[in-house]
Length: 89
Image (cartoon, rainbow, N blue to C red):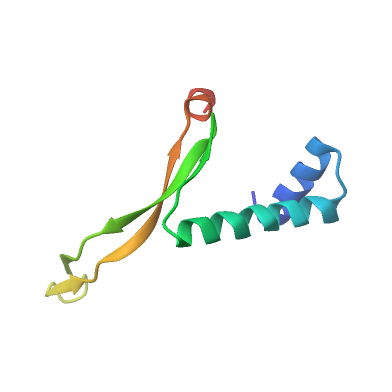
């Protein structure tokens, strides 16, 4: 499902116009992004939670040459599904 299809599905499920559904989805994405950027967690009971984790630097291999390379440390977004979502899927 792409963004346009998600907007259509939200509009029909919530009885909203497509414009209102797009604004709601954009607001959710913007709010979630800014919350994660601050290092906080977004939890939706039953659906799941988004959080930020630190991935340490590590050694990898260049697939073309086989030489070892250093992969920098970075922050990654993690999603942990809630019990309702996990049970449904």
